[in-house]
Length: 60
Image (cartoon, rainbow, N blue to C red):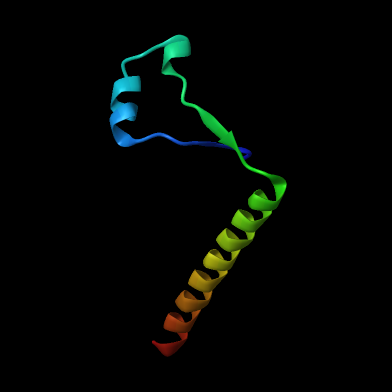
């Protein structure tokens, strides 16, 4: 994913009724470095959760 929307909740409810160009949300593009950092953080989080689950299974 190389796009990320930046919008507050009130605007989401307003945009819900809109169509076409008026329904667009301004996007901010992420750099390759940011994408890599986010992917690594997500992978670390998933592996930590898997390890915690495995530890819980072993203790039972």
